[in-house]
Length: 152
Image 1 (cartoon, rainbow, N blue to C red):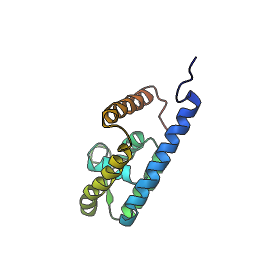
Image 2: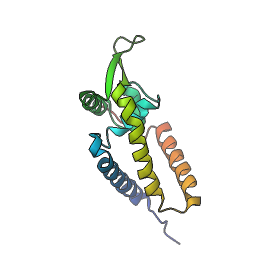
Image 3: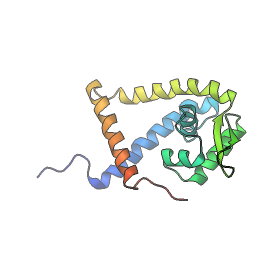
Image 4: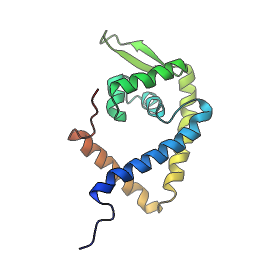
């Protein structure tokens, strides 16, 4: 019987290695702008309107709320985001891009997109869409069964 190309035990290691390499490359690409690879998802999700509360950011990024708070604190210090009182929930704050953030994020999007393109350039063009689709399905599966939830 043939062994699978990636064993169940190696899958986590493979994802970890790919994620680490991509974060390192993105971190290098964004360093001149004073933004880290870990701060990038907060900026892009806020820019795209997909999340504007720490709890939403934590869920979408896959980290705990405390980690999101620390990322947001650093981005506030850099003048890229601000906390705004949420009129619908006085206990909560929304995260919004500052004018500086609104100007910088599109520049960073081009840089990160170029990095993604360079990463995918090693795949045959016919493989790119299916692998992205499969990863999105895997992500949704993990989110829906609670496997990807973080606590804290």
